[in-house]
Length: 189
Ligand code: ADP
Image 1 (cartoon, helix red, strand yellow):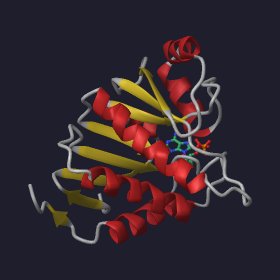
Image 2 (cartoon, helix red, strand yellow; image 1 turned 90 degrees about the vertical axis):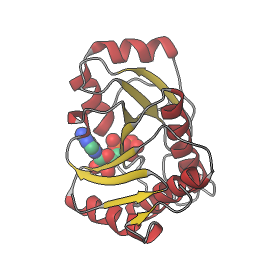
Image 3 (spheres, protein in one colour; image 1 turned 60 degrees about the horizontal axis):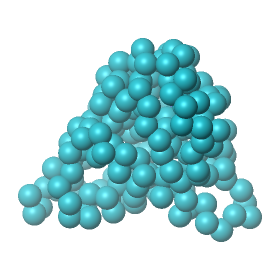
């Protein structure tokens, strides 16, 4: 594992591969507002997790952009799925960066409501939703830093950011190291 940081007691690491193979307390899905399943991470989670996840999504109904909902993880090795709806990127939009940041904050909040210790997180909005990888990676770790800097004691001891391909892995690594320059920064704890 080449991408690894520890900040205020929480490990932040990177992984390349299929997010559905992770045994974690909660796996984050890059979902859509209708919670109906779709392409990319969403399709993989529903395919591997089985019909219980879709049934739970249908019971909930919808999720607004920037928000999250929690369901069972069905047959996945995870315990829960946090369905996160990131913004669709558009060259004319002015608040999509804020919305993507809000999505990550909602992910962390949802994870804490589950008292989760370890979650895996895909590069939300960078697939079908078209967000440029560099901007999305920068926002992901900005939100992470804001969350860990908030001063509250968190249950989250480990955040694993998952890239599907090598290029996204490198992008995540570059932004992780930029935002968290020290390998070990446990200052204050
Ligand atoms: P969105 O609709 O939010 O853009 P996507 O699922 O289309 O979500 O893509 C988000 C990111 O997840 C992309 O970088 C894509 O390459 C990646 N991805 C797609 N499938 C998987 C998977 N099975 N595991 C991990 N990452 C994945």
